[in-house]
Picture 1 (cartoon, rainbow, N blue to C red):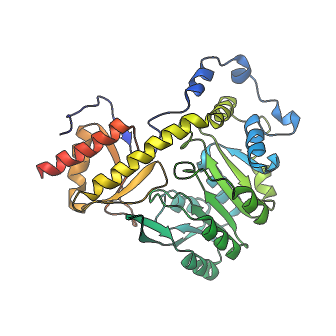
Picture 2 (cartoon, rainbow, N blue to C red):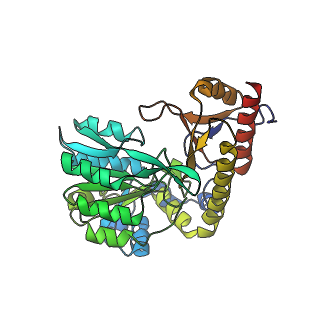
Picture 3 (tube, helix red, strand yellow):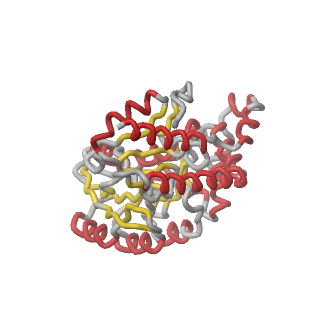
Length: 355
């Protein structure tokens, strides 16, 4: 049985934030911050680059630094792209089963959403959502949206799109600006070999990433993107001539260099996802979905949601009970530490044993 109120503080397993935290080297850097980082603007612009971080990303991916965009998290990139390129009454094509914010931001500029559905299937014996590229192309051809958005891995379903499927879709919608939101890159795969070829081939493509998830620096609010050659206006729009947050830049650089730490944490998360798959499949009415992110979508009986939510809150456990058009019986659970994950499963079993 779970120990009642084992944790004195709330365990935030509803926000997709890291419970392990960033590389310990980030904390070491913060102990020795100087006037240079806190009191002075960056001088990087005088060298012809945006920052030390965009320069580092450029070198790592062999993409011109000019085509590397920095931002206040990937949310800021999404806003910049839509507010700059989407005019009133124009359309943006988005996933139906996706982050609620995608569905809101177009309306801020008078645009319209067109949704494409995903379908459910199985992968390795586990239920999963999947992109239906044929259907996506059909809807694109019919609606001719100005902007197309793909999330890979997708929030809250946790699925991703394969390189081959993505290439086929990009070929079919060369007339639109395509944004690929890869905020959850790294948890299911650290593949990068497609980034440069796709950016070179598709001049209207933007691939967006963040330091918030895999690198566990959500509080620093820093994201980056690779922009195709046709998007010079977006590149100019995003430039900040006095530089960016110098602490965030340095922390991002440090995090990128500590592959050993993040690989170890991701391995623990993957093991715990396998634990979640196995445990949830044992419970009547529960269906876990395959995830390539730091969270998992779990379907459960609708009639227990309210009472289960109350029960978990009494034990200082918060998970995300979704209540949207596309999700009425699903819950999104952020992967915590091993102790947190086991405590959550024990608590759910204790609740079910009392029903």
